[in-house]
Amino acid sequence: MKIDTKYFGEIEIDNDKIIHFENGIMGFEEYKDFTLLYDSEAEKKPFFSWLQCVTEKSLAFPVVNPLNVIKDYNPVVEDALLEPLGELKDEDIVLLVFATIPKNVKDASVNMKAPVIVNAANGKAIQVILEKGGYKIKHKIIEDISKE
Picture 1 (spheres, rainbow, N blue to C red):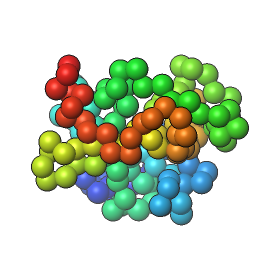
Picture 2 (cartoon, rainbow, N blue to C red):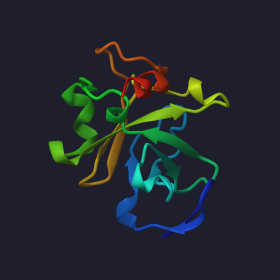
Picture 3 (cartoon, one colour):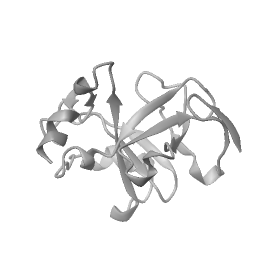
């Protein structure tokens, strides 16, 4: 399938690379289908990737694997919230968090409180709001990278 993207132009993706959000993403509920794109330069060390909508070119979000920010990130999510993902095995779980990258990169942050959970086996995804764990909506990335 060909899609037109915000940062990569027109590209070809396989249907099995589509990530489907039954309820959309918070604030963008009408958009259901996305794919993950990587900057070819960053593939060697992918910190950021892009969650690109397949039906709306201008809708692309920078996302990060939260374990790259907080090594022991372990969100507690009620089983009932995970039901839309279908049968979920540990090895099929992909976690992503949305990043905000302002002009001053030192102020870059990620939303650790509302992760995206993807079932890689079937391409189904949800975004949840964590009630427990004390995770921040604006968790500064640079603080954690400096510690490494």
